[in-house]
Image (cartoon, rainbow, N blue to C red; front, top):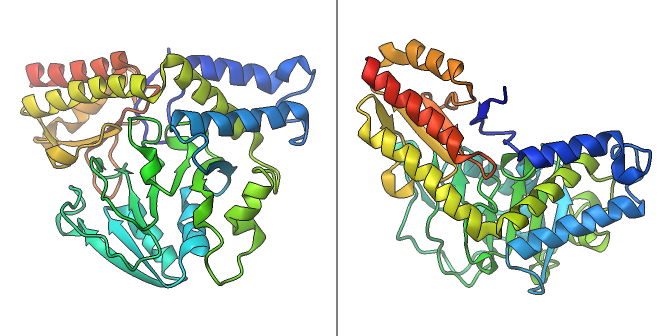
Length: 354
């Protein structure tokens, strides 16, 4: 029986994507070769890369707007470094909303001055700072749109004339935004797009080439753009599965359609958290994530019972991050509303039996 997968990552993937990917590993495009055996320079895989890049821009509404889509390696952690390497000349600003922002700030400090424009550390990152001003003398402003560990999500982005960079690893393609307000977006595929190993970077070309330092080729966005994500051997399988997932999303109706489904899933689960006296949400209500719902039991003596009931119902991956504790239900794009319903039923049953 396929389990109800609420894991924070690697993410759940659509059944049809898994089916096509498994077939391609055996025999790709009737070539008699596995997808993971063919040359990344072959026409078959070049077509995959081209399609994946094109779909990414199309779904974000950024086609023909001066952006390039890249599939790189190293995860978002490498982008913490690459962003600063390519853009930070003297000073950059960061909104600190949790662990991933902290890590990005740490890497940026190797290249210049870093200003924490605002932070939510004072309340253990359970909210998103608001009503802040972004200084106009920054090389760029960086934020994390969704925080998997704490279950918070940015709902409104600041208006600024300086380049804005966003780590969207855990909520990319999940909701409608004006993506043109960002000059650089990056996202590890393993949260909402594909398996671990690929990282999507969408960058506006005209923000590049403005730092005075020399950038190693492997870390230079301009080099990767010029080589169309083929400067080195790309993560073939991860790119292919990401392409399949993007095709699945387009066929579903795109970002607008999946946002409607994601809203229903989040509303169903958060309603149970708020109405059931045995549970309490971690994040401030106004800043709750559509992707990662974090919550705790109000009576820890029920922990074993709740977890046993979840296991029996086929629910997987809801343990909270070690730094927060409690529970975390990740509701990425491919998770069904039915799966959320199963979790809600277990929570309701716990209350009735308590």
